[in-house]
Length: 340
Image 1: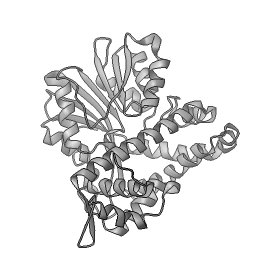
Image 2: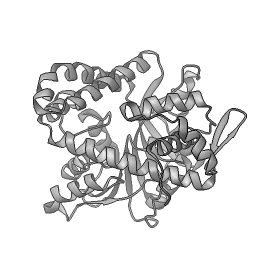
Image 3: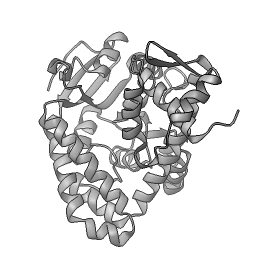
């Protein structure tokens, strides 16, 4: 692979990320994306625009940018490597922090090294809905360090395979659960490439992970194939809309995930956890403030500041009525019933 500067890699990631939303970015949109996504790691892209266009990777037309087919593939690789490395580091450091362990206990009611919006109440509902037993073969998409995966298996006896694209956290999960190999295993897998055989699992779990796939319709179709005609899925999904979008898009039947289910002819039931999510973000902001000294003593102050910053942002969105959260229970053979 030819050498690319950090600025070129960031710009390619930016253009691809916005194009995945079916939009063609102008320079202003790219600059806004860069500030949000790369934050303190953002470098100057000025020369990258010219160099990438000279290489034929970046195209410019009517003030909008796009990528060549080759550049799109390169951008996907750069994004995957960056996210895998960053997530590895973040999750492993979180597991090592005593302050973060206490943070999870106080916010979620249980310390499973969560980096999502799922607490003990939501996990209890998930287990109730799926009714897992030792006979179930479960695939957990985006398992991270696998603490939630392990908890669900410990509680139900189900045989669960956790997958994640970050090699470090998968390795850590396998080592931690070596004595439970009869019902727990973890492997590296990209959710954009779910090549498991048809009927290889009877249940799929996805807890706040399907936001990160390139093509939701394609991924849901692959999930449907994996569970076969008699399988089920349990998915937590939060929808965030733009300021000018219709609030109807927050309805359980109108989210991006619901539309993907409709496109795959999958029926489902839903339970609303929007109020629960608000309480979680409220607790995150409060507890992060209260545990500042503990995080600083631990040497993980950046974890504290990161969670507080994210909580402030999401609380504003929720107060503005731009967020909804639902648990979806999908059964391959189930009449179309929607509930709360």
